[in-house]
Image 1 (cartoon, rainbow, N blue to C red):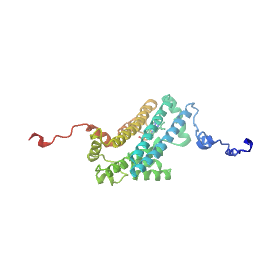
Image 2: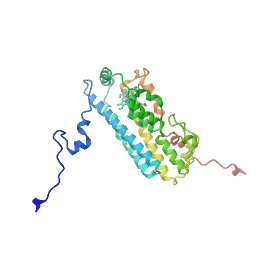
Image 3: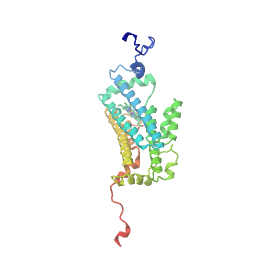
Image 4: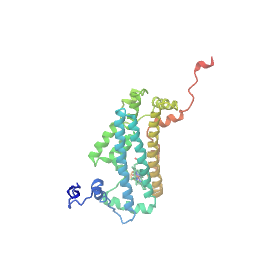
Length: 294
Ligand code: HEM
């Protein structure tokens, strides 16, 4: 009989925690308790939310890149590409966060920022450890940024470790070396904490991968996925630069120098350098054999 059938239902969450499965899984109560405006400006909530969403995406990208590195080390190129394609996808919503604060004029920004300093002290986004960790994983290793994390020793240790460890590009190059594309030992066994020096030998590796349009298809797909990641990252920097021009103009920023002038050179910091420089040669006919004219 039907009334003897015992239907199993999950026990209701205890009254003290006041959770539903949805709120417990997604931690919505915690999430929505994390926005604390310091000014009276009605747009500050949008600023905080937009920055927090960026923080979440940077952490997501860090985890995905670390996962892809493990897959490359296990020689699982197919799965590594799938993981890296997710990194490409994550850049879309990350870059769209700029729309959420595009309404800001200099007056809006300053009425918010003028309250941050007196409440928390002089801040700069260079104090953000997620962005820096992601940048180190992308292979842009600038040790000088560690100085901002002395008040957070655990984060300083985390970033110092990321600085000294291979970046995604280093793992890509060792994968290529293990799979028949000779990468010089000096590139593979170097001190990873110093900035990467691009060279002709690695540029030739990319040129060889792309030499035959119908060969090395999966490696070409890897190259295109990395190019998409570099584009997504550079697009974020461009949108940030334009937002700074729009709301801040030529004002001096954290270091006392003009903020825009500080940011402009960072536009040239593009990950995976030889993947880009090789494009000046991919498709060129091979150099003519000197014996041809005899
Ligand atoms: C629209 C208003 C903004 C202005 C005027 C601005 C200005 C600046 C300036 C001048 C710098 C250079 C370092 C310094 O002097 O502090 C910088 C760096 C940075 N900002 Fe912003 N920023 C804005 C919004 C944001 C937002 C919303 C985020 C992210 C949520 C962000 C993240 C960063 C990061 C990650 C850096 C380091 C960039 C690098 O190392 O290449 N900024 N910003």
